[in-house]
Amino acid sequence: MWTNWSGGQQSRPRATDRPLDEAGVVAAVLRAANRGQRIRPVGARWSWSPLAVTDEVQLDLSALTGVVAFGRDRVRVRAGERLQDLLPELSRRGHALAAVPRGDGVTVGGAVSSGTHGSGASVGSLSSLVEGVRLVDGAGELRRIDGPDLDAVRTGLGALGVLTEVDLAIGPERIMMAGEELRALDELLDEGFFETHVWTELEVFPDGQAMAKWANPVEDDPDEPERGVAGRAVAVGSAAAVGAAVGSAHALSRVVPRLAPALRRSASRWSGSTTGPAYRVLVAERPVRAEVSEWAVPREALGHALRELAAATAARDLVPRMPVLVRVGAPETGWLHPAYGRATAWVAVRARRGTAFEPLFGLVASVLGDVDGRPHWATRHDWTAPDVDAAYSRAPDFRRVRDRLDPDRRFASPHLDALLGP
Ligand SMILES: Cc1cc2nc3c(=O)[nH]c(=O)nc-3n(C[C@H](O)[C@H](O)[C@H](O)COP(=O)(O)OP(=O)(O)OC[C@H]3O[C@@H](n4cnc5c(N)ncnc54)[C@H](O)[C@@H]3O)c2cc1C
Image (cartoon, rainbow, N blue to C red; front, side, top):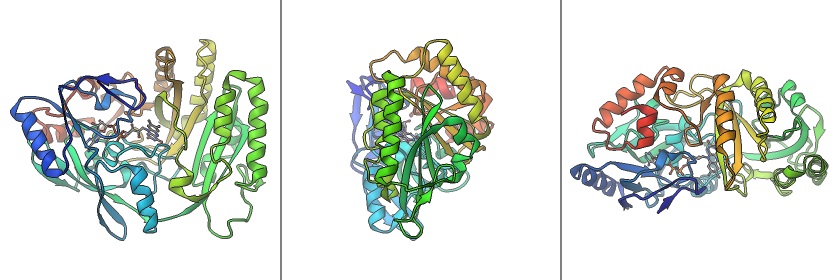
């Protein structure tokens, strides 16, 4: 029995291939083609949606790891490489990726194919960093893609072929200094919190408070007081600042007792260690086994979206038991990227494993869909092809590339059939 990371998706593939190199990927695709079977690439299994699920042949890319080549401003990496290995390797060489997601167990191929993002008003997703790929198409042909088709591949959903190598843009390593503070959500939004810092994240609680987390590159003396959330001087990372946040969280947890554990966890994210390379500061240390539904809403609609969500969940007694996670991102060029063509705010609603999340996620989809939200493909959603067509002006172009790279739908699955059509 195959399961994804959260345990919420299960399947019984009739076979699993685990190629050791690119030639092995070609052979696996040709073998599936000769047998008339469908084959589905899978990375680290971290998607909450059935993106990687198949009952036919599963192509496990976990052995396709390692850096192929380093350049001054790009790295070529095998698609099964996990960020938890790549990011420290880049750091040792004085480099970094601009985007750092919360979870670093993901593979480069999976992250790129699903549009994985970090957070920051001017920061694109991992998909946006892609400068070229090597891909095995549905006929088992190895192709180099670095032209116009790249905007299809950026969020290819595993529908176009198997990525074997990915070129990612890299920048210089930056030491980040991070802080956190419990504040009223409305104040934070009014003060332009998301525009004030390079990296930002909010965990929003049902009573209108939010744990604001931010990080900026250290430019001068790391011991100097850093910008506060609202311009107030806050000794970021100091025991006092973290202690105050934890204290406020504890006070709030008395008011909202069922959120107490989550509040304590979020308040102690950095555990007193708040300065270091981005890959150490920004990755969430203890990912919680939860189900997630995350939506990309137009950046300017964020305040309205959060108010609507709070009112709707309270009215139906479906208030999430975990804080709502809010992040931001720059407009994307990937044709099926949820942030395609617009500055975006990501709103993630989480439900602990084992809880009945469907009513809550159904409501979330309805409320955030109404504000022009688009679901993160790797999280739980109920979208089908008509929704995709209505929301993505370049969906026809994506399908044309799919028709060219995989005319026989070697990489299809029931989930992809629903999402993209047969
Ligand atoms: C704890 C946790 C934290 C997370 N944090 C974030 C976050 O901060 N931001 C965010 O945006 N997302 C986040 N995610 C979601 C995650 O980034 C995506 O689910 C991502 O797709 C996972 O990568 P993976 O390697 O597990 O891919 P999988 O889930 O295995 O596959 C995802 C998709 O990619 C395809 N695929 C995989 N490898 C290849 C390949 N080589 N070639 C072609 N297609 C391929 C699969 O077919 C599938 O369609 C998080 C998930 C978890 C569980």
